[in-house]
Amino acid sequence: MKAGTHALLRPSLLVLALVLALLPLAMPNNYVIDVAVRIALAAVAAIGLNLLMGFAGQISIGHAAFVAIGAYGSGIVTVRFGWPPLAAIGGAALGAAVVAWLIAKPILRLKGHSLTMATLGLGVIVNIVLINEVDWTGGPDGMPVPPLVIGGFAFAKVLHWYTLAAVLLWLSVLLSLNLYESPGGRALRGLNGSEVAARVMGVDVARFKVRAFVLSAVFAAVSGSLTAHYLGFISPSLAAFAHSVELATMVVLGGMASTFGAVLGAALLTALPQLLGGLHGYEMVFFGLVLMLTMMFLPKGLVPSIALKLRRKA
Amino acid sequence: MADLMQFVFSGLTTGAIYALAALGFSLIYNASGVINFAQGDFLMLGAMITAAMLGANLPYGLAIAGGVLATVAAGLLLYRLAIKPAGEASVVSLIIITIGASIFIQGVVQIVLGKNQQTLPPFSGDASLSVLGAYVLPQSLWVLGTAAVLVALCFAFFRFTMIGKAMLAVAANALAARAVGIPTSRVLQLSFGLSALLGAVAGVVAAPITTTVYDIGLMLGMKGFVAATLGGLGSAGGAVVGGLIVGLLEALMAGYVSSAYKDAVPFVLIVFILLVMPHGLFGAKTSERV
Image (cartoon, rainbow over all chains, first blue to last red):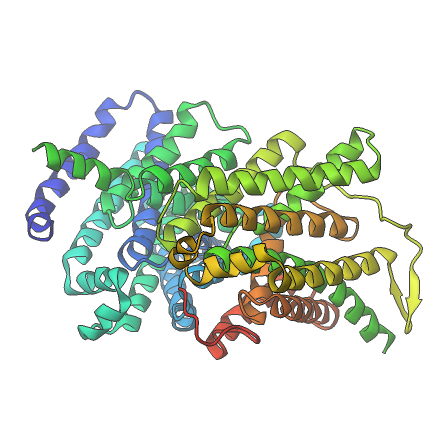
């Protein structure tokens, strides 16, 4: 796998670019494009979370906290301080990075269930803050976010948004794949396998874990910022446990340690409810089942399992 | 002073609830090394089903029995259908499976029993007693008393019964336990059933005070975990002390600082504890099972 993957990188990126470019031709109406935009934005957050869960092996079920920090960061500085959206997105991403960096050191010294529980705590705390700081966040009712205008160009049509989200998704995949192959990515995968072994090989485990955490927070925040501008409205449910679990489910279903797995997971979990005509209160049952069944029957997730099947046939 | 006593009593009451949730964590962890993220949902399930049966005009005692039995069944099923088939799965897989189970249980309850808050009537009236200048609900005494009894039973179970000792043996070394003829799978199944039992009883006793709702298990479970960690995972006495400390800190935070942010206390606490003393107050210093 190690030798083959690098050569495979370029074709897979080309194929992704082609698919993303041609997809609008196959999309019959704005509703379908809207779903595609949501998928792409969710996929960016999932790719980021995969850096942490898949590469570094650190489960987070509080990752929606960073999506919310991105969304509310953008919302607050545009609405209350009149920042232009692009600066707001950058500022929110930076803010999320700083928050992640500050809490990474203590939180990442925890392992297994303790870390999982601590990330959950992070989500809970952010959720509490969003609900209680009414003057800043609008409290439980949420707050409006102005539309996206970059350099005088207003993203008014859903196809504009598709273009933006597709480019962002492609860049995220590129970045993630390159990280996977970079020395840092190897180090992360090494510590996923055995932290002790990685440390013996001279990997600065703590530093790489912190980097993965900060980077995954930035992905989540950018996704959150754009989602906020796209929807035009945000509420504390962005930071809710259910949303964190949804993100983790995307990564687990698609396949931990697989960038395309995160994209597939995001696509399936965003599109399926739409195809089924909405889950109408069955979301939790659905996500819970997906999580359990994936771990029981496809512990590697969809993309790695399919890849293995194909390789065996070949 | 009266204020302080009031906070202390309400802290001890919620602390006793956390202690019971923590006991459930410890029980399963002791037997299997698994942290069951659905532990809090057992508390919710017991209380919600009891409330539903009361709503169907069953007598209180029967409703409680039904709620507890149904929860035990859920615990056994969780092991049978999800944990056992996963076999020798990694810790990460098991964590994800129990998180999935937690969401699944919440989803089913939300659909079948609804999203509304339910409350149970207090066991023995709601005329509050005056203790050292503080008002104490009789139900608080039920919670504290039940916690004390269950903790004592847990102690006795592990110390004096063969099954309890078998459980400890499985936890220490499953292979060796199997070699001496302990049916490991049945022991593990029992640990899930028992922790569901503990959870359900805790949930039912607490519900008249806390009320219950489909997603309350998340908070209860997490605080139970913090309590168990603080006390030292796997230690029954530690679970109790941990629970009471978490409950007290939370009540003092709510009373003197901010009630909005009281729920943040346990989470800050857990990161702090695990950094300063990774084995908790009473945890074994030698066993590293991460």
